[in-house]
Length: 316
Image 1 (tube, rainbow, N blue to C red):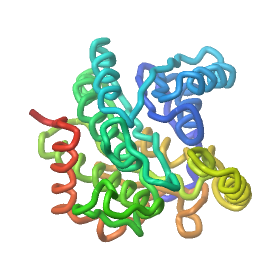
Image 2 (cartoon, rainbow, N blue to C red; image 1 turned 90 degrees about the vertical axis):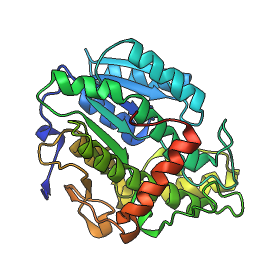
Image 3 (tube, rainbow, N blue to C red; image 1 turned 90 degrees about the horizontal axis):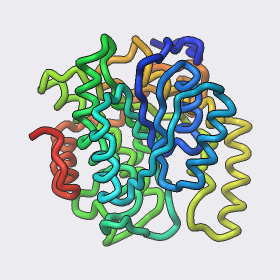
């Protein structure tokens, strides 16, 4: 499907439970507000309690009567991911849509997660890998109680096209480049979505795995982080032109919402804006996939690496 797709095309989401990581700002926040307005019960999974509470207050003001809640989740800590998943599963409630949205982009120096992984790979890839695997019982539960198939939506990036998976230095210990490590993490996210799709279909699961990218959107990824005053000022300048010439964070959320709700979405699909270089546009459709993201052998190898690093298995 390649059409001018808007939030009015989203069907009612009453009765559905949606979990969005990094929902306190940007694409995740706008997706949360929109889905709440459509009647979904939305869980804002955020690392920072103060920012999360502020986002929840904004959401409730923007969508009166919304069914939304805040849950604290730090994807840079596997302990936090495990504890979060245990709390969710203890509720014995289904998750109909899981949106793996949170991300870290190009910190100027190499940083590590609580588990010693390079921050971007550890957060963007390993955190979401573990979260998805651990929450699979809740997704499978949704598959038994709804005519609509549950979905895992993983947010990738057009930056994946210039990424390479360095299996000899996944954690960028030998050499760190902010954007090289970011591109690797987003390529890995897309390969994860494709490999998850293959595994789910092989297991005859009703859960769908799809991916989306926002184009080039003016989100907090451009402004947050441990940066100098000059670097922050430069990024504010860049973000101004991104907002003026490319996608706003609201428009950047449309591919995510499309992947999460459209009946035209296919298993293993990847969706994004159809404007110039896929950087922006109100038409949403199939996004272009770089050759290296289609490498099933490397995707399988990456999956094994993720299992070993997280000590989490998708299937018993």
